[in-house]
Image (cartoon, rainbow, N blue to C red):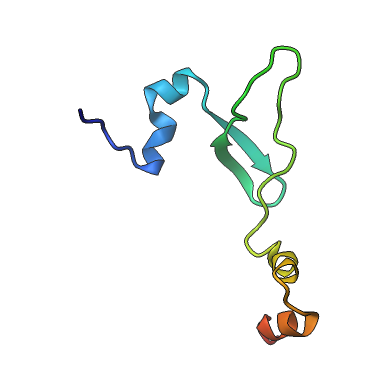
Length: 82
């Protein structure tokens, strides 16, 4: 058996994915429009929504470093000098 391997950019035009309404266009408040997967389940009485847009690059870096055990001093040393 063989199957066509799609490139990421081709998926938005895939006939099957279009037919099942797989992707949706969303508006990010800072970055503008983007396509993403719709929520994987759909309920007739309680429609699902995207509650939070993806963070901007680096937006969560300090929080992640703190959770990884870095001290404030260590985090400060990682920041580029102004």
